[in-house]
Image 1 (cartoon, one colour):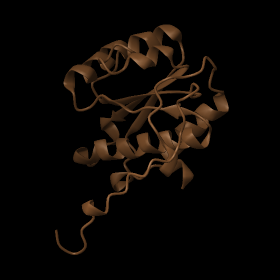
Image 2 (cartoon, one colour; image 1 turned 135 degrees about the vertical axis):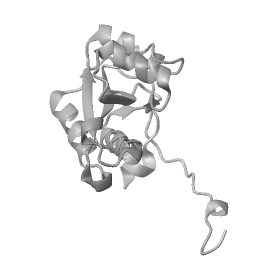
Image 3 (cartoon, rainbow, N blue to C red; image 1 turned 90 degrees about the horizontal axis):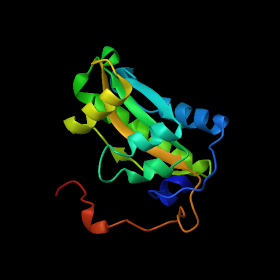
Length: 168
């Protein structure tokens, strides 16, 4: 449970590559996510090339940190696996959260950069990777070893005023 309570969005990374075995663990965690009707619509693009990271940094005004990350994972939903089209984003969100939690467990940090449902961002990533129309870009997660001062630490966000029992 420490990973859940300590996870924070990490936007600055050390100049240290993420080991291949850790990348695989991140992807395995993603694929363990719950999925509507077990459709598992996910596909992943692992980006480590500096040029590729710099291109991804241009998807929005909030994605500049991707250029300085040693790794980014682009999450895609594959329409051919979507038996329940309306739930694909929920499936992808669960996979994204699993990656972020596993990153904490592995001593890494990352931040969730939203892409879907913003059509301009989805089209930018589709064009960048020459994606077929059946693949829907969902998000980008830059990942790396947190730079000093970018710590995973507990911040109590519990607010009992937001909890309602039986009635609102």
